[in-house]
Image (cartoon, rainbow, N blue to C red; front, side):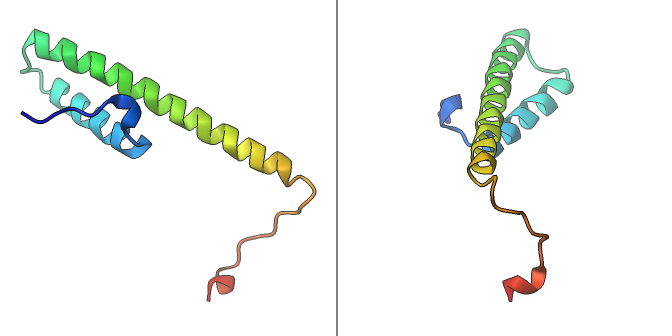
Length: 82
């Protein structure tokens, strides 16, 4: 039996991937009720965790933008990479 990681230990990407897997499995409709409820509960936890991680990322972006309000943003130029 594989051990399920704690939701809060998962990255945003891992949470979303697991959530997609749960949704796909549940959409098939051949899951026993108890398993469906367990998966639904896990899915809600994953969705909440993902939402929280997105909110944290948004806050970091806001902080960075406010710290650099005086600096003007310049358009991205791929030639700068070479």
